[in-house]
Length: 267
Image 1 (cartoon, one colour):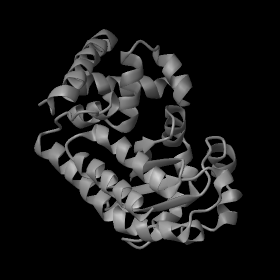
Image 2 (image 1 turned 90 degrees about the horizontal axis):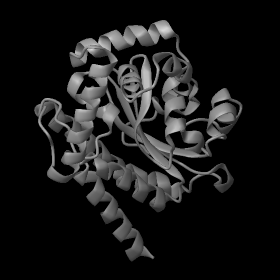
Image 3 (image 1 turned 90 degrees about the vertical axis):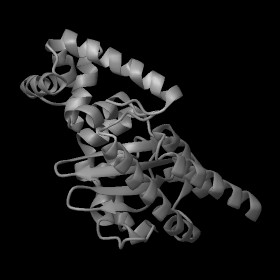
Image 4 (image 1 turned 180 degrees about the vertical axis):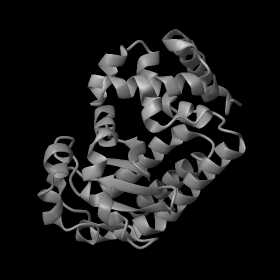
C-alpha cells in the first residue's frame, strides 16, 4: 500500500514539473492529486482585481467553470477564508471555513451542490497584490470531509505545484507570450495579445460564429458591453471585424495544433 502511494506521488510530481513547459500536463497532475486524496475534482484558481477563474482543472465541466468566472466566484465562502490560511498550510474542513457558513450560502445551494462539489481542501500557490492563486481539491458531498492525512500530504505537495506554476509563467514571460502545448485558445489569446479574461471569452465565441447578442445572453451581460469589448479585441488583435477575428482564430488554432507536437511556437 505504501509503495503504491509513493508511486502515485512520484507520478504526480512528474506531471507537475513537466507542466512548466507543457501546459497539457497540468490536468494529469490534478487527476493524480484527485486519485491520491479520494476526491472528485481539483482546480487551480486565479483571482485578480475584479475577476477570478479556474485556470487549470480536472473533473469540472466547462459550464461549471464559466458559471464560476461569470458570477459565483464573488459568492464563494471558501475563497474568502482561504485568504487567511497561512502560507504552506493545506487546510480542509473548518480550518478553511465553518461548515455551517458554507452550507447556508447561496454559493453552496445554487452552485456547489448542483455541480457535485462537497468538501474542500486547499492551499496557496501564490499571494501577491497582482493575484492570488490557490490549489484546491473537491470531494463529492456524499463522501464527507477529507481525512486529516490530506492536510499533511497536501502541505508537502503544495510547494511543488507553486514552483511549477511560477516557473511556467516566468517561461511564458521570457518568451514574450509564447504558446506552449496544450494551451487552450482563450489562454493563448490572453498570453499573446494581452486580452482580459472577459475579452478572450467573447473573442472565442464570436470568432467561432456566435452572434454577439447570443453571446451577451449566454454570459449574462448586456449587448453594449459585448460590443464595447469586441472593439477592444479587434484593436488588440489588429483585425477588421468579425471575419478578421475568425481568420485570426483559425490561424491560432493551427498553431496550437502544431505546438502540441513541436513544442512552443513563438509569437
